Amino acid sequence: MSAPQPGPETWSAPAPYGSSSPAPGPRRSPLAVVAFVAGTATVLVGAVFTLALPFVLSSSGYAPSSVGVLQLVNGILTGVLALVATVTGAVALVRRLPGTALASAGTALGAAALLGVALGLAQGALYQVL
Image 1 (cartoon, rainbow, N blue to C red):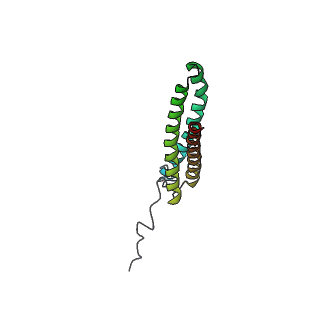
Image 2: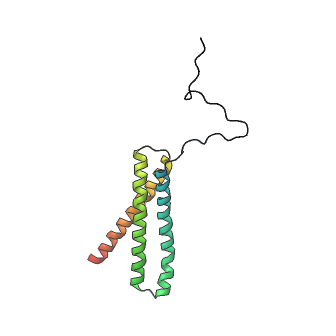
Image 3: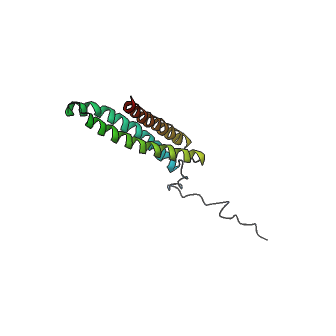
C-alpha cells in the first residue's frame, strides 16, 4: 500500500529560485476605483471652472450669456461625474467589494457634488421667481 498523494488543490510545487511568485488576486474592486476617480474628478472640474470664471468675465466684458454657458457646462459635467461616483461607489459598498475606503470616498464626493448641483438649480429657480 502506498501513501495517498496530495491533490493539486492542497499542494503546489514551490516556485524555482529567482522566479516571481504568482500575483495575488485584485486588492480593490474596479467599481471602487471608478467611484474614487469620478469623485475626485468632480472636485477638480469644480476647481477648474471656478478659476476659469474670472477669465471668462474679464474677456467677455461681464456678459451674462457667457457666464450662463460656463455654468451650464459646469453643472452638466459635474452632475454626470457625481452620478457616476455615487452609483458606482454605492454598488461597491452594497456588494461589499474590496476597496471600501475608495468606494466610500468616491460616494461621499459624488453625493456632495450632487447636493451642490441640486442647490445650484434651486438657486437658479429662486432667481427666476424673485
